[in-house]
Image 1: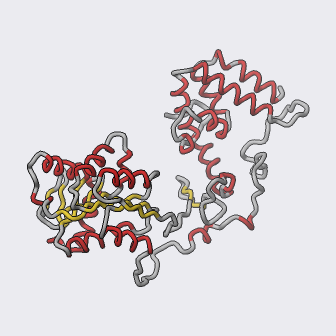
Image 2 (image 1 turned 180 degrees about the horizontal axis):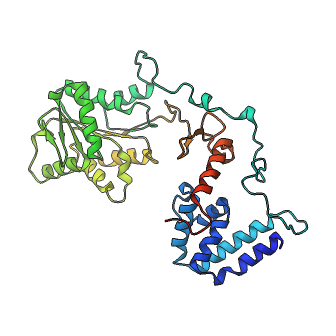
Image 3 (image 1 turned 90 degrees about the vertical axis):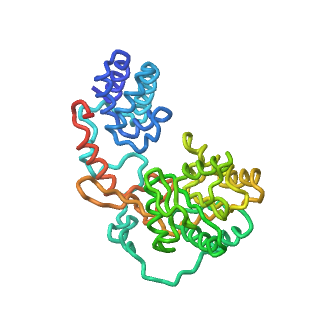
Length: 367
């Protein structure tokens, strides 16, 4: 039976398939087809392996089986139309065991243009000590804090913590108290340990739902919810003594303001924050930092300054670690070639296929 006949048989059988039969048919399709089928149906489908992707597609198909089967039929037929014309083949097409066969449209794999694992690992590790010199954006942020609120939006690893530490130091030298908030109790505990080492344990306290230590310290670490509650008390007339001399409020991970459930906590904290205290918002992932700065300007007594820096200080390298312990670069290049998914490293491709074979047996996928 020819390839077109097989595809036609698959397509016509869709409407009468049971869930188990549909599951087996999905397992026979290439991953690329499943990802096209998942668009608009499965959130972040590109992160799922083939077995998990089939599970998610089957779950989604329960609400609109007819539409799902129709789209699957269209994709299968489209796949068949891309097959080169010719006489019907009596032998099956090459399987993934034929390593030398490249998919249509893929770039030729050249050893000369593919980075080696040793080259990919080169340079990783702890850098040699060097004198610290603040980056221009760090100096700009600290200077702006003397006059107004500041929103900092820079990549991870760029040095936001330095700005927070130096700003807190300057505020305490002026006999003003500082509050540093984070969205998680675990992160608050980490910052408490870090700041106690920097400033001394007598100058740092922590207030969370599980921990209350040195509550009268000039620098207090807490979750954002705790600060919001303190500001609620102040608004109701029960003014906490810690707010009398408050000079700086640092809101770390401020992208949480967009969180559907907890974002209101950040909004209320900013709205109720005393006008004499400077606000410093830190984030590596705010999509619209200028909008946040404009909003702060509209509700606060000073113009909020946005300090934005896009160059990543610590470059990213992408690798793939197979469950068997094999490590390989994810892409052919040292950096991440955004917008070029066909630049996957040949060894990464091979490991992907190996994992797919291992996790998708011929029978019903394991759940």
